Length: 407
Image (cartoon, rainbow, N blue to C red):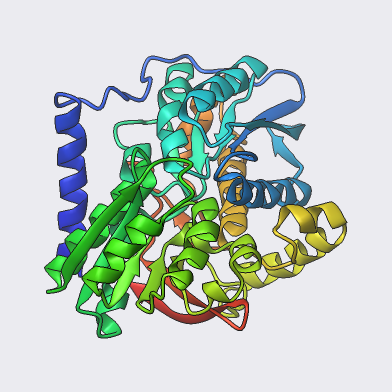
């Protein structure tokens, strides 16, 4: 498993560099002066999609960040108590809109940014943050290119090479020898994760019998599903948005597909269950967190507090997908906020101006026990994580099956 994971990482880095002539073009803004903290307010940007195809997941990430801000609304640095103010923007699940949203955050004077749900928009905005010298802390953006070559982008989640390997391993453990892939053209997350699954699955001796793609905003998947059914795979891997999942599952059932459908972290959203109904039954997926994990006291405290937060306002429940279930991306949003908070605390006792660049520098040394596990970062700004949770939709609920690592 370690060899497969290392091979996947090496492949994506090689491809990324080759595509850019040996340079990602995302050089981290090493000469950026950054933005200074002024007055007694520290502005943190919330860079998330609250509309568009990833709006549901983005909103759950926002809820985790908002709750974290309630838990830790102030920070003391060098004898001054600073209020932490969230500045929220909607990147609309769109790469072009993401750049505009990122620019608006910089103009508003934020000294750190949280997000985004969706690797494509995170990659699109990365250079904007780097050029301004403002660190960004991704929550669930799993594509390796988010942080690759960008000294100002970090993240609290695991990466897609790991996630693809995990789901390939899960499929093999279930005895599935053949698989079909369905991914979205032009979406970094979807196509990247499908490629990592293929590499790992074939490396383990499996066979990909169909590899189908669809366009953004496509709603009729019958032709694709007909081809997949004809290939007769043991399982079908569909790394897609929430919106796509709600459409493709009923169509798969209507086409008489009985192969096991497996998916990725984006599918852990109550909307999929409510929209797809019994067509969602049996789907297995990988994710970052399980609210019933009793082993981590930090997680246990978070789940109790976050459920109370959701139930304190009917609108929160609506934004969360209609229930007080704790989504993994909400936990990651909370951890992302706390990572920046820990960096701010680390500035206490330091000399010189307090700037976004000094926050970036402090983030490199951050290490704390988070909701989703121990949080610290490697030289690329990636969280050091090696465990995923496998869940399955049973009786209309996400139920924990097992943990899976890259060991």
